[in-house]
Length: 239
Image 1 (cartoon, rainbow, N blue to C red):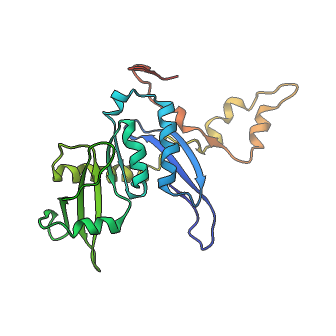
Image 2: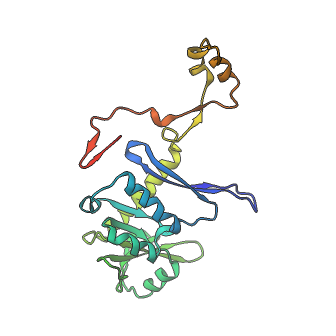
Image 3: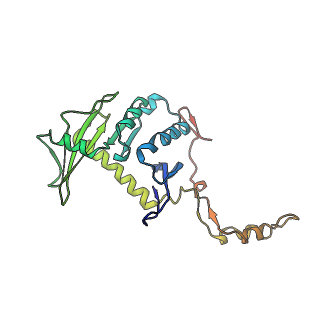
């Protein structure tokens, strides 16, 4: 997430965030330097995820990581694959994708006269078996290409494309919601709670005066959650 003004020569920060979208919850956020790339940010983000949710290797095999090209470097894939997760990743290099596309003689049309996909005749080789698909789409100036690298060996081309596109829908939902119910804070309203504390006075502290003198009122929305039915999931207990 960009925390950087659009003005020329502006400085800012990049926000890395792991969210459980189905539960509308942010697990954690990392603040990186403004020049930080997605590729470099991936290892610390995933290591923190594994610290918070220490899934077994067997359970990791049931977790799918869908990532865009910013994360899809060879070094990241080489680092990720031994950890056991299933992957569906867009490759980092557009020029490599174009080179793969030149080897393809038969394409499967996904959208009429707009998008095509095919298995690469020369898949990328990593430490675990993967398949490599090439996507071609039309732009006003020229056709563009990307690689999809996946450990899901049984998927058809259509299934692969639809599964990757679902990642984009999740991003749209996150952007439209702005994670307002899951963020660390948001502007609050003094009237919502001040009447409760206005008469709280001690010899050493006037709570009402303290609240009235505050520079800002913030609400902590992450505590406002529906109760869950249980606290333990396999070998993980929430605390």
